[in-house]
Image (cartoon, chains in turn orange, green):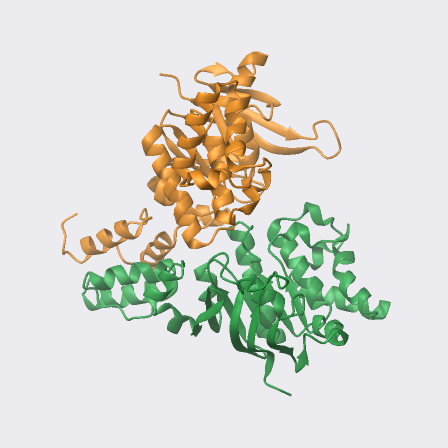
Length: 287
Length: 286
């Protein structure tokens, strides 16, 4: 089966052929399989947002291709339009984009634009509200009467209600407190388990990526620096730190132990793995 | 001079004071901030942190109780100017607080408004930009800077007014890890080298571990107040307040319950590495 998203030598420039030409991404060739959970990491300006805006045709490549289910999304007008629905993009601070009179109408905006019938819209709005934990009562409120965390969840529901094959979230936990962060990450995990859809999460938080994603894509200076299983990527801690990225705190601890001469693995990225590694080391558990 | 730069005496504040019984966002807070200290403030969204911050330099004025800055009552309109040149604020979004089109003009905005002599402004702007490591960028356009750099410019704009205290309201929330580190290091240096008092609001526990003192807010009140070690030793209260333990603390706790002999109160990766290394040595692993 063709990968759900494939890019071939994707390159994007801003302000092409002007004095201000900047290369945003160069020669990105990646394949994302159906049902995968991919974390995209990279410092500010590394090209993360530019890349994800190609996945649903918001940006057109200057050269190279974007294939969705094996088909070039820029083949025809229809294929671009269908890409918008197949790949749901949830921007950073999406709560600033709420605009309708009620939360219900706001979540219904996407499905309505897809030309769905009222019954189908209703089902989808309620299902999406369920994913993000908004009650029927909250659906009738003005989105502006919700708390910050609720607004964020309402905005995410608006994208989920389109039931895209691929859900892309750009920093969904930015600015939230620890409890809010846990809630949003938990609902994304749940959504993925229930729908089996592909999820792409852009995040500065390596701990979040370590906790949720199966693969990590690292962008550095407009190029793909690494793309592989999460443990493999985090085992390159030192390189990640050179790119201005953090590694999960536990990984940092194990890098430090390794520097001190302890024979530990450095591809440890969760507390549980760290615990097992130390138990192994002290001989209480066989590897 | 009083050793406290900011004092809250039984302060309450509600946003809609017109409405009878409007819920107070800050409730009966009594607090003093010592001159030269570095205080971190934690609390979930809506716990009253930002309101507390705005009460520090007369952006908001309490309905009951009294806030004083160097002994000046923030409710006295005539003193607002002096209060704001003593306590400066840096906000979360770097793009919302830059006013000029050139970095050094932006830093000069504050002192200009204070009526400082042009020659003196030049000196202060250069000094302020050097103190945040942004002097080489003085002729840049702010929108070409990274988030961390913009926040440092905003901080320079405050220090150029020679404020004695900076209140930062989640200055790192919108930054990437490198930007967060830049801002944290800058603020620590200003505190250490220039003796500027720092009140630092954050959602990142590992940033709070670097302060001298940590306050935890919940429901408008201060529920914990002490050194990072003291505060983070109250695990249940921290979790109940919707916060986390620093990752290194969580990991060490896990190891302790597995029978590893680590000391209590580990907060940073460095402390955790030391402790595990010492234990491994004792067990003869290396």
